[in-house]
Image (cartoon, rainbow, N blue to C red; front, side, top):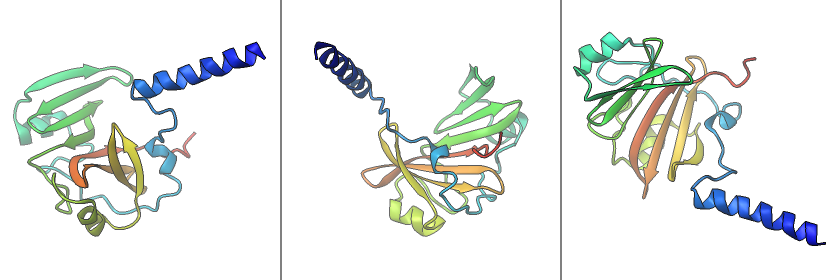
Length: 171
């Protein structure tokens, strides 16, 4: 009986530690929603003519010299950071970008727009999750392997992310 209590205390302590660190072990990853979310067309998504797969030179041509450049690993990546927008580059191609002001999606969604406005612009084929403390809705374009996620605080858009996705069905 003493061993069961000790084991239970350890398990409880582990989950409390995760909770206190802000890590929810039950949080779902966006790929968990891929198969159950209908596809929408996101092929028009761009910011200042930059799309997924644009080159680093394209980004610099459209936005100028970045405020900061950071290098990442696993996979090897480079981050071009500008005021209000950041591009992740993998093998010299835009893999994802996100922005939190001054820009809009192809369907006109900007920071400050409501969840209802987003759904009106992009439709009902979305998934919902909590990411980094933000209520988030996301859309998949399975033909173009693109994902759009929009984070909300107090029902207002605070961040928009567009990125390449790999089908969870690929081996």
